[in-house]
Amino acid sequence: MALPIAAIIGGLILLTWSADRFVFGASAFARGVGVSPLVIGLTIVAFGTSSPEIVVSVLASLQGNPGLAVGNAIGSNIANIALVLGAAALVAPLAIGHGMVRRELPILLLVSFGVLLLLANGELGRLEGAALLAGLTALTAWMAFSASRAPPPGDDTPAVVRGMIETIPDTPRTGSAVAWLVLGLLFLLASSQMLVWGAVEIAAHLGVSDLIIGLTVVAIGTSLPELATSVVAAFRREAGLAIGNVVGSNLFNLLAVLAVPALIAPLAIDAEVLTRDYPVMLALTVVLFLIALGRRGQVLRWQGALLLTAFAGYLVHLGITATA
Image (cartoon, rainbow, N blue to C red; front, side):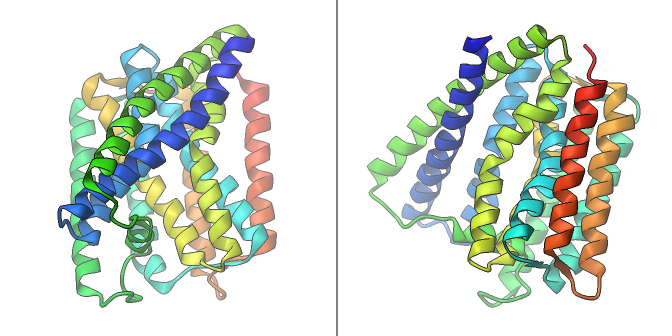
């Protein structure tokens, strides 16, 4: 038991570091060869920051643990809203911009209901995976178009896009950027394998399904970068970055983290996902949208406390109902 726990802890630490270095190297290299910050933000940064979830889900699917892959994606979305936004709102109320209410949040709701329809038959096949990636391509093109029309740092620029562009590093030497890119990718693969192995071993030892481990240990672990980013943004009174970070991450989890492993091998969807976990994720998304539509348009401290309480209650429910 000690070795799998060490593998999970070490894997999560290395996963966070390697993803950051991978994004740094790829972004710096692209910027060094003249790629615009907008394109870098919408491609390299967007996919790079979701790379831990994507790589973990792909490896889990390839190794015959689809529950871990599905639980990682859906559990991360639950953690992003209830844990990440809840904790950030306790630090400072999070104002939700009008652009977010008009565009990104309705899109997240639409995508969430659309994915539910794709999962309803108990399987996410290659055709459905291709459809999700097509949706991601269309979303990326729309964000690029919206951002290109808004004068920087225009309020009409999607908050998701602004957050991505702000993370692009200054240009280092090309050789240094390539070295970080390669090193980050290698450690990303190795740390993901450590995490998957440790999670599967712990699931077997505790007698619970790999879905439960994916929804809890793996999902919370891969959401830690979002938690750190959003809490820091709340301290700095940059609410747009905190909200945009979560909404962007949730969109990519649904459109990429679920889609990529499904393209490799069809994902079997446990009945519990459709009756327990996905409804929780959907309900939290609706609650966030309703909060945004409120008179204040803010996630207040007491609402953040309720989100954290809901997350704790969900974890307790998982612990009580967990079965192998």
